[in-house]
Image 1 (cartoon, helix red, strand yellow):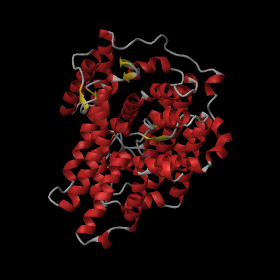
Image 2 (spheres, rainbow, N blue to C red; image 1 turned 60 degrees about the horizontal axis):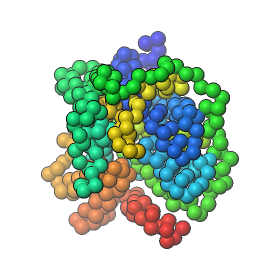
Image 3 (cartoon, rainbow, N blue to C red; image 1 turned 180 degrees about the vertical axis):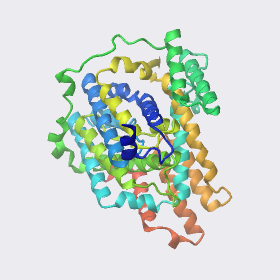
Image 4 (cartoon, rainbow, N blue to C red; image 1 turned 90 degrees about the horizontal axis):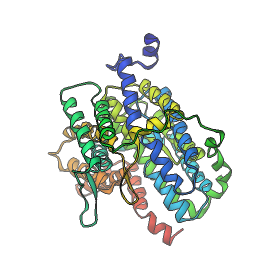
Length: 454
């Protein structure tokens, strides 16, 4: 079996092993498992059935992650995009008072548009047009983004009405168990211990159970009923309702977010996995983008919002995963999760810290340590050259500070073009970069366009 899997995925050639790939797949799953509970919670607030969304979320993640492993052979996992699901629930379904099936049909349309562009080679061409320094900056920015997410999930960083963000109450139970796991994982990482992330997450989980921050599950297993599959396919009959002029800005905004989140995430993860070649390109990027684009449409069809590649895949990569075999393990665990939602919720369960405010402290260690590992890419950027440094800085700062991978990438792209123009090197810039500037300007102005044009 080991020899067969090695021939299929080639983990030995990439300095990995069957055990390492399995460990990486488990690590990625545990780091992402919170989406199994967060996504249903968000979408159920907009009227979707909680249990059905939970099952569909697990199935969509399983199918798309398995596809990524088999088609692209990378340790990248996919699931419903956090942030995009909130837009779906609170902006369109509740804000526009549209049926949830119509809103999910918008996601299907957006995904199909992305599939067409991938088939035409457009997404891959954009990836190649972006300078290598900006690709590195994407990885660094995402590392900071993940770190910020982890600190927020641990209650270590909180919203502050005066300063935007601020230090949380570090004497609170959630913050204490998150910090304990972070420092345990960090110490083990420094010592080069395999499984450091898993041990950090386990430390926070056990500590949370001991002090009563986390609740033990009421059951170990719970088989889904026929009603738990009710959201799958419902949106497909509403495709016609989604193809209206009024929803063009929504489709565009979702597309831009999906497009550049995936480009940034895939390249950042590829850098962390050592898979990027000497030209700064990720081999088989076309396959990655095709799976991701199809996954967005599948997510809409399943009623779980857009499914996209997850930066949390870095948890498995940090454990040593280098091939799609890790994604196969992650996908299988997502499929099994439909039967073990109660016990899997132990790691990703909500902890209420204020009215309408929930965090997930047990997953904070993995996110923070992954952010640390991705941050190391910053040393590969030539900071002595202002033409390289300024756009990279704008991107690195923009991604976490806007809390948007797409918005931050736009800052870097625009900065790169502006710098080249003022230096008299406008002709050195690919026409695709100029096109991206126009698209990002439209992306930033999507609210104004929606109000005054559409």
